[in-house]
Length: 338
Image 1 (cartoon, rainbow, N blue to C red):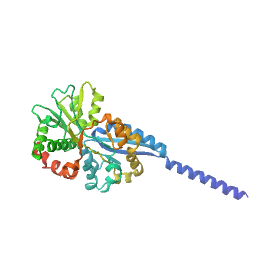
Image 2 (cartoon, one colour):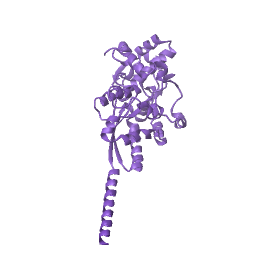
Image 3 (cartoon, helix red, strand yellow):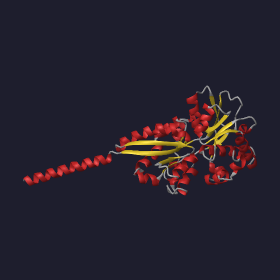
Image 4 (tube, rainbow, N blue to C red):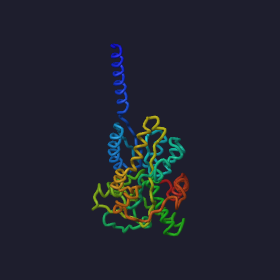
């Protein structure tokens, strides 16, 4: 009888010990690194708090999320060169494709893993001018006029700049009469460039803080951030008659996440971007939600301008990259090395 009691007690101690071990395994401190393009800082600062709360309630784990920001092209190269990103939230699909093609860090099918081609939010390119719009900037062809000083990032390093360049090219094709007119327009715009910063946030600082240039070509959300930070009495946003539908994609960086043991939480971090609360947060930060109902509910924030998709005009990002931004491509031909 005594033996049975001891055995029962031993089993109880063992069970408590196992439960204690199980609890310690479940309650973890996890760390993610989100490597992103330039103007997403403020959105992800807010989103990270949202996700931390969600994951704590779901799994009991605390997640620390670090952020790295810069020109999209530079960020892509940094990941390929060894920056340990668990997730990449970049400016364009071509950059993410490089993580497969050059880095072998993600599968070729990465774009099928999340809804809307792995693009949880959308954007476009707009103009920011000084209050009163003293030069009367209305559309892309105004940016090529003599005496207009343009601020834009460098398409070689900035995803946003590539979207802006292609938006202008598409305007030239559709509104000015074809390839020759498009090339002349874009050449005129970049000949008017006062500064080519490496990323969108650098161009914002150049235009808003250093007060250089007459017009800034930038992301829609970045333009609204300037109004918030520097005052709507100092700047105004101009929507061109035609622009491009920018589709910034996201992906888990599989090789890194497996090595860090963060695949589950990194996947959830990106999946939660499609939740109702995250989509509302995107709209608050002037990203166009991929959720059509939430986009419609926030329609007053997003003027209904004509937007074209990159595939409709350029075939694909790979074709656009090779033709326009590769070494010796059209951008190098019209701008040269300055």
